[in-house]
Image (cartoon, rainbow, N blue to C red):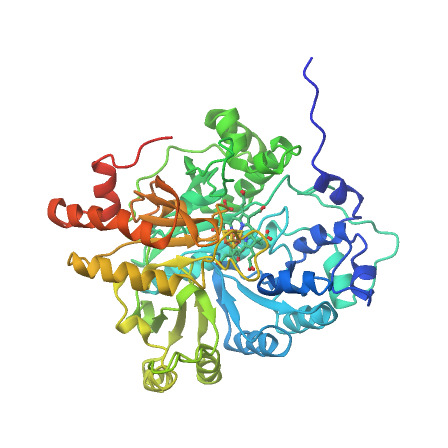
Length: 567
Ligand code: SRM
Ligand code: SF4
């Protein structure tokens, strides 16, 4: 009989953690090191933080026999990426005070502050909470930040999607009081042990991600989510369009490991339609099915996508229906026509205005201009100045951009003046490829990065733009995504062109995504440098310029010509 493999070591850490407490209090108080005890580095993720070290100086510190330059990244939980101006100001204040002087908008509509020293971590998290922003379950083997479409044109529908995202996020939060005790000094409630009615004592086998999308935009990349909801809308008696229900999609995911064919990116399956009132019941049923059937022995095989791929969609639908008590109807028709952001001012429902700004890689920092170059955008100071006069809200987009939302017409000139003063209008002149490109954080903070991504994106886009121009393609839409490793944090496998880090300055080149997030791209060339990437793309661009049909995107042309093949 085949032996059952042992549980992964993280399962033991969770089991012994007393609902995510571990020895975090002792680790944080230990003045001898800037790091936590090993098991606590796993547990702190559930509290929304990662221990990292500055990889730019790792080798230098090793040679000096110093411990790595440890610091912590904190990630917020921010359903649908909605924040108030007061929260914006609180977060930028913390980024300056405890972090590395920048804020990072993530691909899941959250904020990250990097570079927080251990001794400041508690004060940082407590101050975030005072501004009503928490980081519970922003990382770890739980449901992460719930995404929702950010397109400001359909602002009423998006307000609804935000409410649903917040509802689902609250419903799937862990129940433990550990976060409140450790970071907020809330009293232990004597004699009442934590109970995790949804998660159980060992939480999920792995991270779990949910998102709500409102067609025709697929900004959320709904087919990359473990648990996705495609909003179905209808006009009510007052002729207002409302969300009446959702098509449930399950089992998407991006993460892969180089050289391990058992790991793969996967598009979610559409399971069926249900009425909006059942959102939390359905979400819980999907999550608990994965809780009970996900692989707890191998973390590289522990995501929902593997459970569904191996047990089958029909089996999974049956489990979800049994657990939720809801019978799924056949999926309702939907269509996606774009997934990029709509830059500049747009007017939404109720005559309120929304300004979408392009923020390269979501990095909110005051950049120094290189010698002889025009002034660089001062994002940190500029957006602080806007937050001081803005009376609406901010909305982080799944494409790492920012919507200054819900603006009265009379307030537009004041915001425009600040946008100009701080140089924040890069969307106005940037070419389509530069406006839509994504890059993950990668070096120097990400411990898993094999190559640069965020820091490399501008230089790569310069080289790409030059080549596109040579073929007259500079104004064509093109989705380009770069990640420093195959974990897929910028959802690269859904791009028309993706660079996936393999080693310093070397990437795998993937081609053939559809630009709408409905088709995975495929490997075209492996482990190549920038000159080789450009040399590989150049003849393809020449052929594409000559052969494309009207409106055909590069990724679709690559696919039609079968230039990438199944492995
Ligand atoms: Fe991610 C791990 C950054 C979205 C798949 N991701 C990491 C870590 C925490 C590295 C680590 O484990 O030590 C990175 C921290 C870097 C840093 O210094 O900040 C990191 N991931 C990010 C962010 C900040 C990228 C960004 O540029 O915005 C995104 C934060 C989102 C958030 O607010 O929650 C981010 N990560 C994603 C996405 C995209 C998404 O969810 O829509 C994915 C692909 C979707 C998916 O999960 O399949 C993603 N991250 C991963 C994986 C691979 C998981 C897998 O199934 O194999 C890892 C590695 C892991 O979990 O072991 C990872
Ligand atoms: Fe780090 Fe890899 Fe994610 Fe980029 S894709 S942030 S390198 S884990």
